[in-house]
Image (cartoon, rainbow, N blue to C red):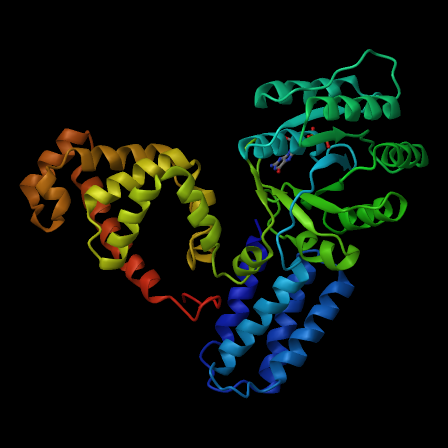
Length: 435
Ligand code: GDP
């Protein structure tokens, strides 16, 4: 996600990175590049204009503290303004009845399934229900998802109106002591009056804690246009952006908050139930700027690595004593963490360079086999691995000598990268470019 912006921002920054002073012309050229990157990403014209105006004003102001270089000043300005445009803080989901609105095919039903799992995993009591009476298949889809997640789906006799289903679902949720009732609404291929009236009457009847607009990121500006109509007619409290995995541009993420004044609360990043993440403006800003998404990476890693082991690994990285034994452990964690290409995009500095790199899970297995065929001594001190040892390891792991060489080389490179990461710490809260 957001690859296009990341690439273009990184390029624009690289051009001014080594300048001791930044002239007004350089700043203007820089802003022009950022502008075309954002517009090509299908961001809203007015939002882009305002954003650039603010960046320009701040960037041209001299930093009187002189603590940072002109380049760092520009970098921080862009970062701060990006975070502002994206919404600054993470938005919590208010407990109660959460109404999901949006057009058909945007990923509404899938999102409800994902959120049901997300909230249930956080320990909340969740129930789901659907008022999409015209599309029994959609109701069935949600029912199946609920079964898969293991949360109740409130089912009512056929013939009830959408409004009646909404009211009864809410009453049942109260009775059951549910924290979040996730309520699906009718999906249409386009906006029509009838749909809006139905939604309005449901909203008045259940006074939802949230009305979330589900937007398909691939629709670009069209998603924003439709959101505006929903917001005017119904009143939204937030949005979920789906299919961010399939959209390299990300223009909607950039404009939605500023154009409508509603926060993006979650992003969908795949078709599976676990493919949903809270929307963190600071992390998205870092990602757009090619700073990588270190925080998401840390959190993801923490899910798979028991805390004390993570501590040990972190210490080893910092002291430079990371050996092949640790690499083996890390490969095991990676297997647990799921698709690697997603994880790689989160590593600082790697996002732009490794955009096209896809790692096969089979390769992890192969690497594990190679390390497992080494003796303890070899794992701790890879320097002793000579030709005859390599032959033995290749044979034992069912690989070739060149596979073994490749792994050893990668290990060396990883150590180098770790050194870089270790030195890449800036002042607290201020990310430093790793390139
Ligand atoms: P609805 O008509 O709005 O309820 O849409 P669905 O939930 O049925 O989703 C439509 C299609 O989008 C399905 O094929 C989903 O698997 C897919 N989808 C939903 N969310 C995402 C996402 O975040 N990423 C990707 N790649 N596909 C998604």
